[in-house]
Length: 366
Image (cartoon, rainbow, N blue to C red):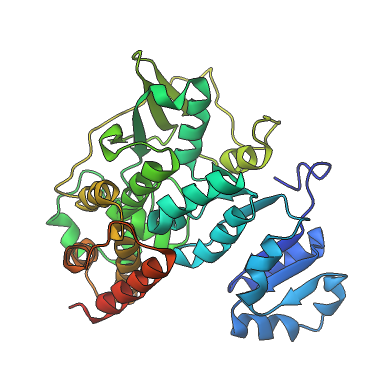
């Protein structure tokens, strides 16, 4: 998006964990003021490349993420796009919100873990959070059509993943390779598995609860295999507004960067000369119990989101490593969620402690 709109944006900083080759390409093209590569192994491989020093130019290469929060607070920074997977993105998201920046939020887990604290701080600092996830971007866009106080219901759409229509018993034999075969989106391993279990939608339910200041009773999920209707907002007068576009993440990314402006976008466009059919189906809560856990965590709040997210991160990792069966992912998460010591109004420190506890329990679970 920045490549398309160089007259409007300048890259001040880039971060990566292991993607050294891609970071190297982006440093060479965009010449940011600084770049962070947090994996020590990847960092050493990058700096040992004899061709790399010449590509650095004036870019400062950083090996530790400790200074990242303060760099994000710099007066030079206007927009922070947080796209780190998991709770690892929470410190950067919090720093950007605390500094009153515009936050283009693709790190949904930050709100899953600490939604009330983040939204309260954003209100205090004037930070503007514009979601990047396709569903929450759609809701955000649809909410420009009316007052939030007149929103009756939010409807999150879901493709249904690779196992739409399967029974729980049929999913007992799912392998990591099968779970990685998403029908619509190309994503990283963790998010792809989350989509297969529909835990990703559970996380989105919790995120929507805090981001849009609605109750869990005002949130619904509908299965939409074509992934063209990216979510709906229903208003008190019965009007239902949807944001519709071909599945292409360039559009919500650009919208988060340019809001409230809409600029030409190099994303896929509809061909309105072709016949199209759209399906909407109710979700199967028996086959995908993660959805029920998402609504439970959104209703209870407190430490539930932190526990659900942490336990799931470990469970997915264990599944990909062959330690758990596919159907055990949600089973693990549910048992740890039910057994944790609930705190309705945790501090950030308490949330981080709860996160660590849930991870330890998930590692020991069998």
